[in-house]
Structures are given as structure tokens and as C-alpha cells.
Image 1 (tube, rainbow, N blue to C red):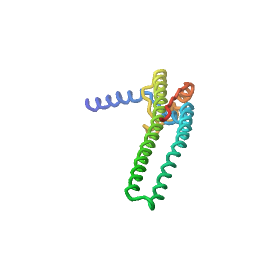
Image 2 (image 1 turned 180 degrees about the horizontal axis):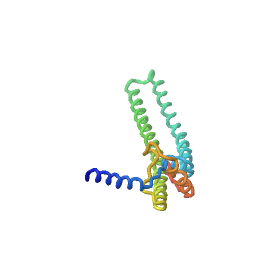
Image 3 (image 1 turned 90 degrees about the vertical axis):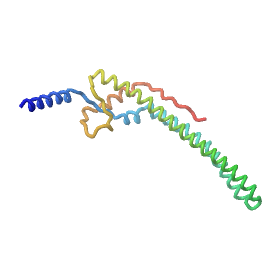
Image 4 (image 1 turned 60 degrees about the vertical axis):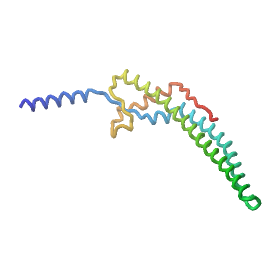
Length: 174
């Protein structure tokens, strides 16, 4: 009998603690992707990237021209000379490929850095929100299956985030 009483008492004690906590959810991805400063900075970065791609396209055209010259000279030159030209072409092609990889990596990192800056601001806002509203737990919307819309604070955090004038800087390539 004492064991049953102890079990019931324990269940009541633990269930009280579960119901006493306040939990909210927020959609971090939505906050970042819809942030005006982030969108503007990504668009500027994309325009800069596109300008650089146009210049890179010229290098690609030069490589194609060299390859065409090699093809045309196969009838005229000796095999050793053709092999030398092919080696030079392959070296230039490898350099070009490495340059493209570095180019893509650079712009991907710039976007990642901007997302991290926005995320840091969101975390500060969420910490302040939790402190002001006595929130015990904030979950990202990807961390749960089903929740009531009444505990979603994404819009209120978004309003505060938009009021912050974020300076999302990025570096040009080269």
C-alpha cells in the first residue's frame, strides 16, 4: 500500500513540474530567410558574383580557343609539340578549375557568415523574450512535430528583428 501511495505521489509531483513550464516555438529559418537586411545583402552579393562570373566567362572562352587551336594544329605539328600544347592547356584548365572552386567557396562562405550574423541577433532577441516573459524553453519549429499556433512567437520576433538595422557585410572575391 505504501508503494502505491509513493508511486502516485511521484507521478503527481513530476507531472506538476511538466505543466508548470512555459514553452514557445520559433521558426528560425523563416526569420533568417525573410529578413529584409539579409535579402538585400544576398541580392547585392549575387549581383557582385554575377559580375565576376562574366569576367570568368572570358577566361573560359580563352581556354576553349586554346583547345580549338590544338585541334587545328594536330595536322601540322609533331606529336611532341602537340603533347606540350596539351600539357600547357591541362595546366591552365586545372588552374581555372581551382579558381572556380575557390570562387564558389568564397561566395558560399559569405552567405554563411551573413546567416550566422542574423542568427546571433535572433538568439539575443530570443534570450530577451524568454527573460521578459518567463519562458523556460524555446524550440525551433524543426524540433517538434505538432504544436499550437498560440505558442509560435516567430512573428513577434520578426517584428523586433526588422527594427534592428543589421549591417551584413561581405567581402568581394579576389
